[in-house]
Image 1 (cartoon, rainbow, N blue to C red):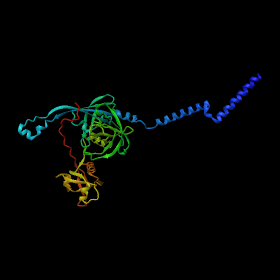
Image 2 (cartoon, rainbow, N blue to C red):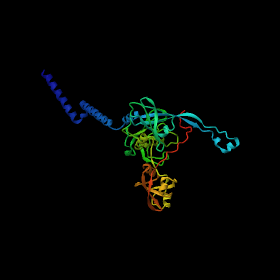
Image 3 (cartoon, one colour):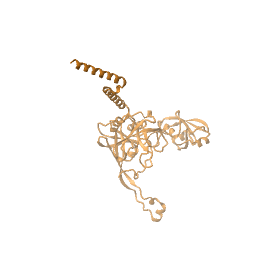
Image 4 (cartoon, rainbow, N blue to C red):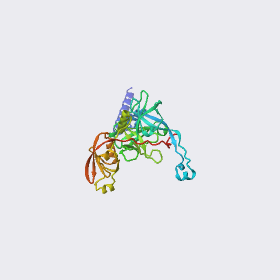
Length: 395
């Protein structure tokens, strides 16, 4: 018995001595050290996963918030099919007689998008989406459909308001488009090519785009988020899912997106919408002049140090400006104390004036400043164009 105890004691002493040496010189060889390391790795992975979950890697919340408020807009209208071009040729008619026939009519349908902005059923869209439409149908993301009626439209900003009589409508919140910055993430939501509701992502590429020849009054947000035919009237939303623009136009040589799209700012859209709802249209100031930008060559000929201002190229006889003494060749430099940068700036400043009220403009004439008081008139509505076959219409 004594010998067994002695053997056990010696063995235990040797084992303890070996463990002491190993733990001192090579602790990684011990099994419980591996177990501790595994625990540490698991904790690190868990912590890293928790941190990654907090990073803004997805915009699904913004999309889910905004998508129910974006609707498909289906329209149909009667259009005229123009006669053969040869029928308009005087030489052809001289030899073959006047064989022209009245234009034939057919029905064409088209599609676009819209944004529900009020529980009362008001939907913002583009004027060109609903222009001359006989029937308008709104389709919600939840599958509901209903006929819509036109409240009013504004061709000069390409905005329109229609109304649908439905309950429990999801509405979109207006964002602060004036606070948008180049580089901000944006989502474009609409119904491109009729494939169904689609969300595309991009950034704000530029702000305050003008002189594009798209609308009379321009102040566009430019984005590289894909916008295609059918997206017109849809929503451009920020990373929080708030409306900052109404998608309107693209620059394209193929008809599809090339990464240059334009949206009307939400601030402008809201202002136009409120006027349309209240009065059925938009009222703007007007003085009856034709203006153009000052090029460097024109500025030099007028002996001006810069190109700021708007050159009056023509004055409507009997109009507000003519009665006040404005002359062709005058350069408008201020409207009611606000400096004029170019012709587009001048147009916006005049449009903001109230018809019937007096306004003071400052012009430069013969290198001298002159203040002129004008009684502002009401801007005439643009003449409607005759509707012929739309090449983008659906069969």
